[in-house]
Length: 308
Image (cartoon, rainbow, N blue to C red; front, side, top):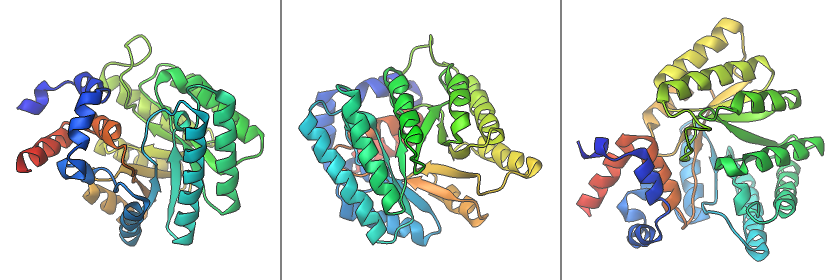
């Protein structure tokens, strides 16, 4: 099968190809991105979130884009996120925002990134919303965690962040954060990292994932279990039942367009399920990371190209 011959690393390298990006985005959402991206505009995204809410699901949204390298650009993104937060609240949607600090200036000025995210977290708290700081490549990990700690030290509670189970260092990072009683999303990891710092084998990533979730729940954190893995989902449910961990202490998070029937079935069991519904015209790198995560996603994408 063609998909089995395409390595994850090759797809992730393709995510950095400007030429391929121009080719794919030249055909817009018709090439299959619409399955995984909730539109190119906020209006389109709001319609998707409303449908998810009507199906009993929660959502978050992200303005798609990669690192911004100038102050004016980060100011525009910060203002846009304020508008997104206001729109979600005005529409009375069960949704919040996830964002990347490199979109707010982390790549060139840590203090600017902090000031921008501090402004957004303050705004979110004032209107009863929440901000999730996404985790990016390992080169940004220390700065991201430091900013999260600064926000919490400043008294901000309406903010969470992300830990990646494929990194060897994550148990230590978790121990560092647990005194804050943090709100953490646990993911396996979507970036291409070297074996010197990240588990190369899936079985090790999965084992670490479950250990991190269990330790975090025992340590008093609120945990977003971000996975489509049936085995992990079942084991987290069993852990919670066995140890009397309330459903108000964790939720399941999944991606828009990936296993929607599973999302609805877990929500029907009265677990909170949140669906990540990113939007924006700069969707190509996000799409490529989703294709790299699951071969079935790549199959769908290739079929959509053939049907054009």
